[in-house]
Amino acid sequence: DVQSYISAVGAEALAHAMNTHFITGTGTGQPQGVATAAVTTGDTLAAKGVITTDEILDFAYSLQRQYRPAASWLVSDSFILAARKLKDSTGQYLWQPGLTASQPDILVGSPVFTDAAMPALAPTVDITQAVYGDLKRAYMIRLAGGIGITRSDEYAFATDQITWKFSLRADGRVIDTNAARKLINPAA
Image (cartoon, rainbow, N blue to C red):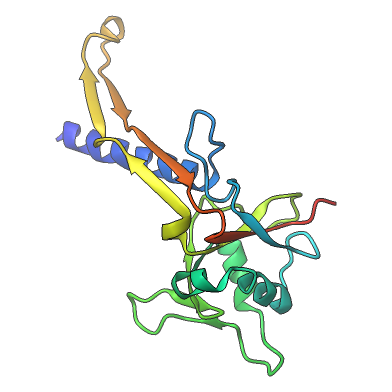
């Protein structure tokens, strides 16, 4: 069943592209990404691409108290690798793995979620390395209808090809700049 296969693969590709825009979109011709948006900068790393225990704690507590109970981390895999190595002053790891399969890992008391669209922990100037906050209050996604799938036997008739078009009307925007913070690399 080629039609079902193409529909599934196309919808998955569209979902991945939209996810990337929801994380790193410019806001011009695409959604405003939560990592590139105007959420408040909570902290700047002392060294590009390197995190310390004190910076994680300072960053987490830069978020206003009312947003902390529902706060979560949005980070890259490389950020998680670095964070898993961090220890407090007694030698205990800050990272706490989820105790059951359905529970997320915990960093400084808040769940951690990874996304391939988040910038990797790297020595790149002014790049967001982590987003922390109550993301349900900070960011809104609006979907206008479902995924549109159109097939055309006529568009590429001269080359005996069938074309498929996938479309989705959606937008994303930061709605509360205080509900989340971003951790960035230093400018110089």
